[in-house]
Image (cartoon, rainbow over all chains, first blue to last red; front, side, top):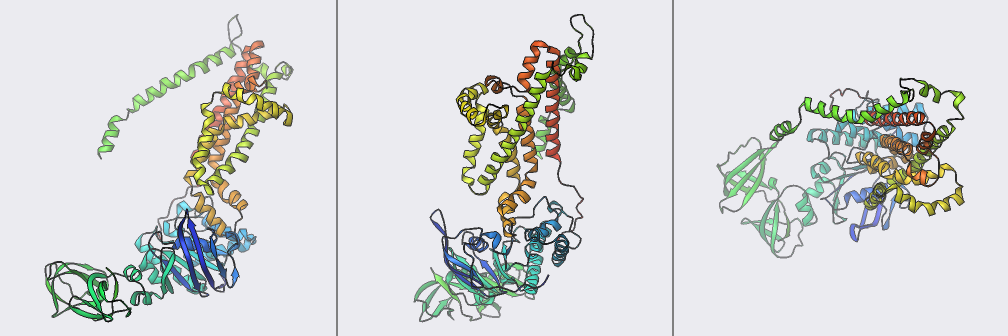
Length: 346
Length: 277
């Protein structure tokens, strides 16, 4: 497959309502050519509606969608030249994997010989050489989604749309396939939208992640940006794990657990707040806040331990090296790293 | 475990199952066997002969049995037109409702099921004035009966197509095809029809079976079909009338058998190689 040129996609104030309830609320988003953007958010935030609107599967109430400056808002789905992979398995059951992949080329009236060659190449690209003659019911879930990906890519679409393509797969396959998707996307340089509710997935594969809530984008940025510098309490709470503690803001700083910490958003009004303290911003130390280990989980390259502080009410999650292996009931001390924290209204 | 045990206790034994099947089969077989026996009788003199069977297919008797052949031909025409009505009107409507107007599904189901609750005689009373208009527009050819038959087969055709429609994710398949560049026509012909093949075949065969067995509407609207022909024939040659009835029964039986085969026939089965991605 020849690498297609990535295209710029622009969503301008798109609005969509269902029965009076807004699903998209003047959503605006600019995506650079070849960029991989994840739309992340809780159920009902409008991420799938946004993706379906880009595909033309939903008619928007107002706003415009343009590709490389060309307004495609009123173009029907079949004229938009986009490839899409769906959440539910969407292979045509009456066709073999090869014929499924050929389908888009057949619609474009590509000759039989070229169709077969390109279908074989596309299946090879997703690691399914030799699966040309298999029907959907003869493939595992992961293999079906790979065929769906090959089918979406074989026509060299301008934009690739992925609507939670991994959510029906088991954890191991999910990780494998998301890496595969990223590898292929980087190789082809195709502009890609990836809808997911799994933040780990979004942070792992996307160039930029758009966190959505109530039909709009709360914040868009690189995964690290979102994690380290959340701009709203919602993003701070939604991305990553946080200890939720009570604190008080005074003159641009917050006091929590008897420590004063800098704020990520300095211009926060004084008063009581909920402090969002990352587990990696707390350490096991030789001295500091005393506590008792409740539980400890091995997470592969690190360990997360829950500690009950001396006040017998506050539980703090601490992320630390696997070399430390505190047992439940062990007495430990905690220290804060002093990193800036996010706060949310109480 | 408990459920399995209790189900095993409730389930009849193999012997009981065979006994029930045997008794029911025997009850169904009695009239058919009696019909066969009747067609083989020589007459009041006693004894058996194949003359009535061979006589029906003897070209020399063609004019004598003309009414039967005409009725048979009319019924076949009616079957074809009725199936066409089902496929051209009902099928696209059901697909459209499924894809674009899912809120209307219950209404469509209700409308399609209504004919099963209306006795044919009542239907004819309602259809008689309609047919005076139909006759003015299309003439009084026998095929126009297919409009009425299209209504009588609705419940059966709807059920068979709906069960197939419900078994596939029509919306996702259509959207996938659309995103790959297919027009709505291509979606219908290249994606939906092949996946609804079983439902369509079953609906068609059931429609044919219903049309071949229909008597009341044709008789009361003064049209000639297979069943009215059998009745007419029975007044002059009861043996041939029973033979034709038996043949019609056998034909419908074969049709139902084909429905069963089509229903159970899947795509080519291959052994999964167990490779997981």
